[in-house]
Length: 210
Image (cartoon, rainbow, N blue to C red; front, side, top):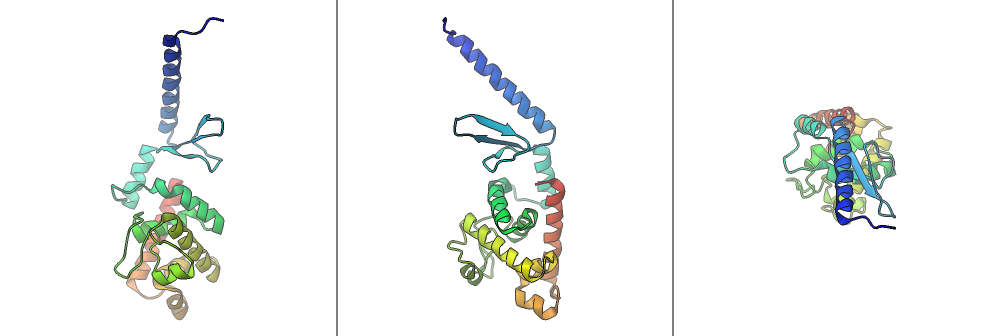
């Protein structure tokens, strides 16, 4: 059997690459994020509708990303997609809406894993030292530890308030005792603004499908 000349092989690879790029661009203009993963046989898979947790964001839909950044006012250096798989994993583990988790992270730290508040809260979900200890969070600045602890705490608050998201969010901000004391959202401007902000962010995430 005759072997193919190198120029033929190179041309074939180039054509396949061009076809792949064209396909991805076509999907992109259809307003979809592109996900990618390499299986155990080194075969690369692409999709705009991932059904396997091994898929990672490969190309972000630029139009949707710009719209979301404008609406939610992300900092230019922030890349929420970096934490998307972590958020989805923890949300599924504790049965919490991932859009709620993203909204809390956005309101608390703006997706900055090194954020520290004047009161001593830190990390993506701004855990206070005492809260982190009770949740057995080893490192508040480690995104995995922080998000897992924060989502676990949200689950506890949602269970405490029988699924009432507004009360759970208010307790996340002002503390469980304050919400119990007032029998609802405490009459603090900071807390009321916080609850409104988180619920607004949550709605935006749900509408954008991210």
